[in-house]
Structures are given as C-alpha cells and as structure tokens.
Image 1 (cartoon, rainbow, N blue to C red):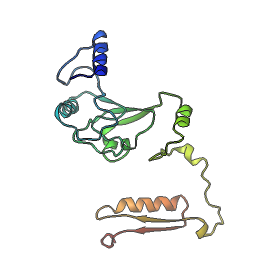
Image 2 (cartoon, rainbow, N blue to C red):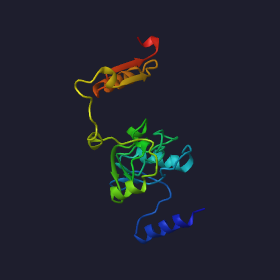
Image 3 (cartoon, rainbow, N blue to C red):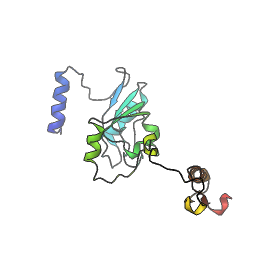
Image 4 (cartoon, rainbow, N blue to C red):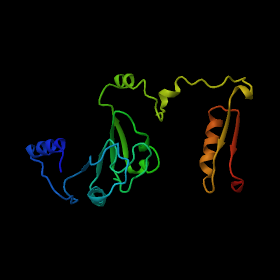
Length: 196
C-alpha cells in the first residue's frame, strides 16, 4: 500500500519524465542518490530495503547519501542490518552524532553539512535544546584561556582517564596525552593491570 505522500512524489517524478523501476539494477546513471531511509531509523533493515541497499553498494556508481546513509542509526553510528557505503553524504540542518561515531565514520564518505536556513536562525531556534554532542572547531577555542604561566599545579586542573580494556590501551593514552597537552597539570590514566 502506497501512502498519499509517496504517491504524490511518484506522480511528480513521472511528470518530470524520470524512469520508474520496480527493482534496483546497478550501473544506470552517473551517481546514485540515497534517500531511501531517514535519520529516524531505529530497527534492523530487512526485506526489499536491505536488498536495495546491497544492490546499491554492489554497483560501481558513486553514492551520494542525503542527510544520513540509509541503514545507519544517526544517533549511535551503528549500521542496523544493512547500510549504504556512501562516497559522500550531504547532511542537513545539524550534524548528527552518528555520522562521526563507529561505523558512521566509514559509511558517510566525504561529509558536508548544509544548514538550509541561516545558522544564526537555526541556533536561536535550538537554544532550548540540550545537545548530545558538540562540534568543536577553531572558533570554539577562541574563548579558551590557558593557565597562567606561574599557576600552581593545583590551579591548572586535574584529569583522571579510566579505560584501556584489553587490547584498547591506545585510546586511554591518547586521552591522557590530550589532557596534558591542553594544560592539565595532574593527569592519571587508570587501566587494567594486564595492560601494564
């Protein structure tokens, strides 16, 4: 059963002379536009959707994903069953955390964001929403003031890094190095004994 909105989109495509196919067969056209599933995906992709994603990935065409590669959880970065392996992703309004985490970093390809509206308007509208993640760039560091050169170690901050499960010591060490590099005077990495 096709919804009214999908039917309206289908009729617009037909009016523009776009060919409509029932099954995806690769190697048609110069680029594949992935707009199959959206950012609200929360369940495993199966059935004809999974078949279509497999066929798109198997084709040799570049894939441009719109907003989020189909099959990717935009919040966690986990592929739910089958996921598009995009050449590039154009995300809209805000960056989604899942595009930068876990499998999302691989699925997105080259990532670009388009605000669709002026960034100032967008930030005003979202002022009451608590973010789950922050996108830090050079501008975010403009207000950062390092510790005074003569500050005592207890005035410079402390950092405790807990991590380094078996085979994963690198992340804990990188986090500790990063804390020290930005000015923390006392840095301690707490790892399991078998990592030492």
